[in-house]
Image 1 (tube, rainbow, N blue to C red):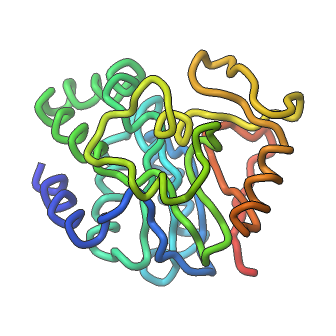
Image 2: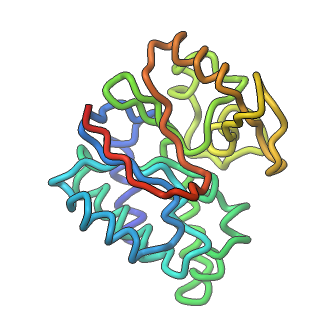
Length: 229
């Protein structure tokens, strides 16, 4: 609880916007740790421990794995210790209505208390939802939204807040790209949308961006991509 309280205090001067925009290259991005604490440690062993390396995590720190508490506590500790080298974005599992079902609530209740889960919920409600790396790479957990027309819309999202069932904030953590879709399509998850390559190209061109970096989906050919250009 003290760690979450420290993170909330740190929010006053480090997480002042839903949009983290002070990231510089080189930076290592990683997504969907999902309570796999040993995998997180292997990531640091491979890429370097902070502050020797810069990190941007794309959300989904809890649920599914057996060590969600160790995972999120280490990440928050690094964020507090190295605020200029370490960045955390919000995923769709950093939401009470989701992690109440998929494991984090039960882990908190079994190992400590429901009160601890509520403290983490308050912390998650303050996390930024997007990041801009070197003004050219837009990062988020999910993807684009039909409601997103300006990056200022992300900067102006209110916090703290729960993730709603629809709208811009929902799409940023829930939407998915699809090779079969042009424009916008229905999402088989039952939440948000899918978007086609045409929407990506149009968005990048309009906002003078080079790349969208996201997580949220399993890659059968898993890899770590370290951005160094």
